[in-house]
Image (cartoon, rainbow, N blue to C red):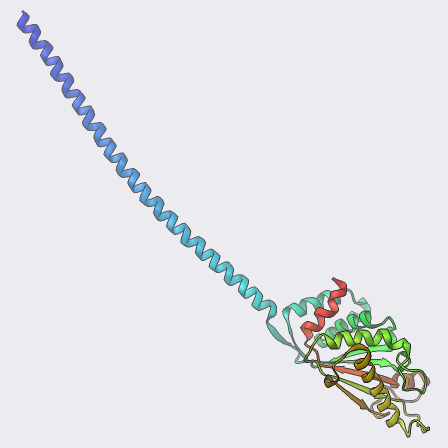
Length: 275
């Protein structure tokens, strides 16, 4: 009897020992599998992080390229109706300016050249003087031409620059001095009525003396480099209108300032007051 009980107890111990070993083996197997999964996950995580880093680097590179292309596009020069070469920034400024122009005048602009003329004219007239009817601005290719009525610059029959011209000439000097490579021609124009006095032999004399008076004033009073300027007299031979009325003769008595600016710098200077 005792022997039987001992054998039974031994069997229980052996069985218990066997069950524990199986559980241990299973747990060990599970641990190995878990470690393998963890290692695999870690490797995959590192691979994903590497891919993400590469993607972020590519995104940054693309952003740099996009910004670079945008900068190039903003400063890309293009031709406008074979009239002038201007950048997209300048075009944007021109569009902004045209939004301020009288709608009636804007409606008359049929070409890009017309729009350009309106934009530059608006800024020049706003910057130089309020006498809109006595200042006319036009552009041919990259040449800006400013016609100023003689009544704003001189007393009647005189070549001496009047005090009324100070504001206009100061603004003109600011525009001219803004661009070192700019060349300027100052042209004197008269109407067709002949003149002969102790001072002037004819209209040639009067037109030349008025042009040189403006040039001297720009040089001496407003520090414009004299090597950039040309004084020319055109007499009465390049009229704006027929000399058949008092009004038309007044249009023909004028000083024309011909300047060749860098249009981007020109707009930047003129936009400064409106920003």
